[in-house]
Length: 168
Image (cartoon, rainbow, N blue to C red; front, side):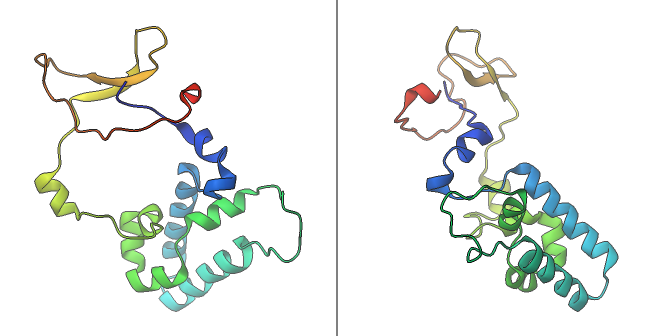
């Protein structure tokens, strides 16, 4: 098996060690928010004030109000985590935010390689797809969309140590 789909449950079940992580649907909502702000507010100062108000006043959770350790998670916390800081939006600009999407701008560090580097040195993966194996108990894997000779290197893949094989 060369591919394993963790699904969002893998991340949400590890909240104590990973924290609250936004999922794809939260980034989709955040992207729609940015598009709406850009459509409604042409003045960047007003747009930034509204953005800060939404992020810092509406979505931010005040931990001082409730001393319980086992607080219930609310969807706003995920959306808050999906949105980049107002400072980052200000530094990188609204057009880049809309072009690349908020997920790109929420990364703690920029991607390792530029798009031009990936276009020059990257590897096309159109000839494989993910799917369920016909081998009983094998799970998911990568499968060829085209004929490949025996021994062909299909795709580079790192070795991944799985401590608890029962999760898969």
